[in-house]
Image 1: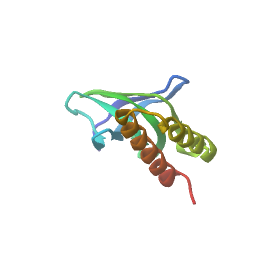
Image 2: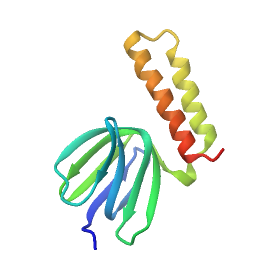
Image 3: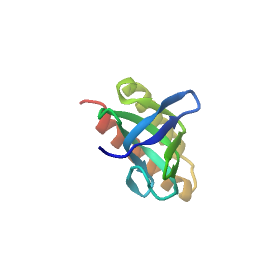
Image 4: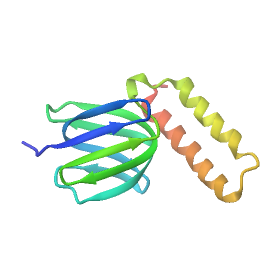
Length: 134
């Protein structure tokens, strides 16, 4: 049996997950990151994407996150999300509104901010393709 660790997914609105898990896949800024028990201590930023949580019971739950930070220790992982919902609760209208807001902000933005906003639009679009059926 795989070793377990404590995982919490927290957004400003609520605590979405607080349980013992065997594995968590995080959409870290530098790429997908799998966290397991006894992981080296790490802090990373989280980009918009899907967090996959494999519970000790063997079930996998998926959550859409819209950025944040992950604090990883050998005994646990806490992901502080800017916003997060279970993928079953993700509304395509909400996602489209986020994309449109980022596109609107592009107008008149500095070059540095434009690059970040273009990346955000791409990440949100990819998130929609992953979790919302066509």
